[in-house]
Amino acid sequence: MSNGLMTQQYIGYQYLSDNRRINFSIGLLFQQGFTKSVRGYNYDSMMPDVAKRFDMLNGIQASWILPFYFNDYSEEVIY
Figure 1: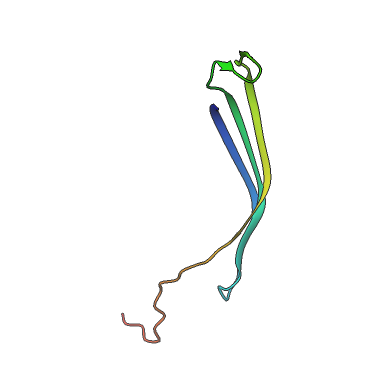
Figure 2: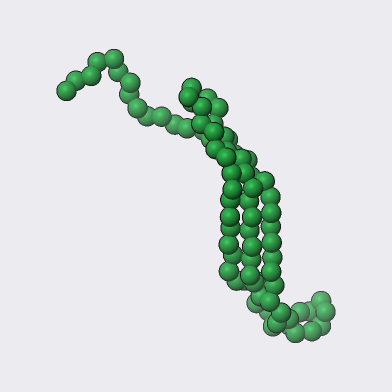
């Protein structure tokens, strides 16, 4: 059990088609955690746990976008 500051970066590409059927996003995800243990004593090693930690997670994130359009495209425009 640990807590601390976490940062996250995302570098990606988003594609939205003109016919509104193929919409997706894909990219690289980077997360860094600057944490320390909440417990003062580690029962596994039977020693005090006061060291600071650097946790890192890297991965690929892909998403499919489902848009909902609520516009009314009528033929007649009234001013």
